[in-house]
Image (cartoon, rainbow, N blue to C red; front, side):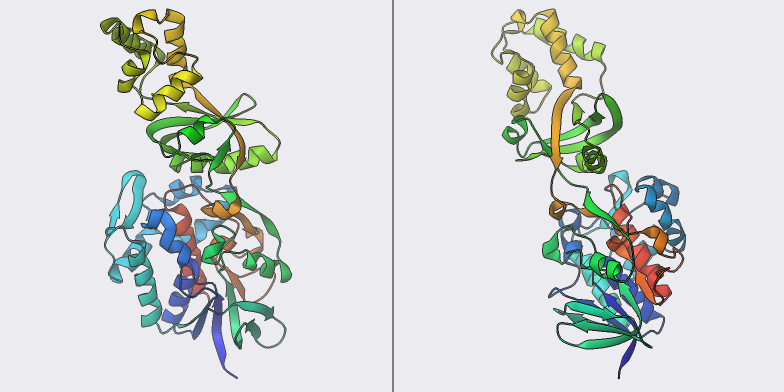
Length: 409
């Protein structure tokens, strides 16, 4: 009977680096993946560019995570962005740093990251089996039995690295949650993280495809301000999305679950204050008294947004500048700072970039990634209840937990 030192279930970023590191240390490792190829979700991350980490320090990283992210401090101290970048550069990937400290392959191709990971597996002689789905685990006895759709394997140790519930077509179906629960672990309720927001107003659908750059979005619920984020956003067929909206979505999800009415206020001109913007409008109206309001606003807003903005402000787009009252002008200025949309719900977890929730961090040893409840059972990656905002933080968490897990197999 052939016995592996470790069987790792799930060949995403965390599972691959875990397998590679364990084998690098001389362990006999089997990596199982139910899909026909490895790391399908990685290939679509960062819009196909793969934002694999961020240049920030550990303290900065932890502020970007949900409260349970403090669990990651130990693994970040042992394997962090510098070590990750060094590993990929040794594997032949040239990296670059962009705005906000986001680190990408210089080629802008996620496939180069996957290629390096596959090389890491190959040079360390990891046995990889794809198209093989795990059906059951038996932990009683001298070794762990792993039963798949094709065979039965035996291992001294087992790792669950199956991801969450987002993008199920990539293989993330929540199987790891069910398996962990069956083995006695508590699962923090899975819910969508970094996901689009559905709005009540029809305006968003009319603006579908329009991107807004350098705006500030404020999240409000029942009159209270919860968060403000500056950056870029996007209108979609269902509502709003884009980097800053995704970063707000986790809090929106929680507020809606609490039964609170939520809305977002878009400051379309965050670099200006009320007086400066009012004075600018007054100058432009005075300089071109016979111009229509919609033509004057060409210098202020994207063309596609103007008509909808004026409609929402109750102003006739064809009104002449010399017909605009002081009160109307000030209302326009007010709305440029406070263009609101009311949230009805978040998009489903299947569309989320990450899954929030998962195996309770209190039941995992942060130094080894071993279960505190089941000996020789380990976890790494998105199956664990840690999640962060956009910017490469979630990917680094996957790599760090995977690497440290591999060091302890």
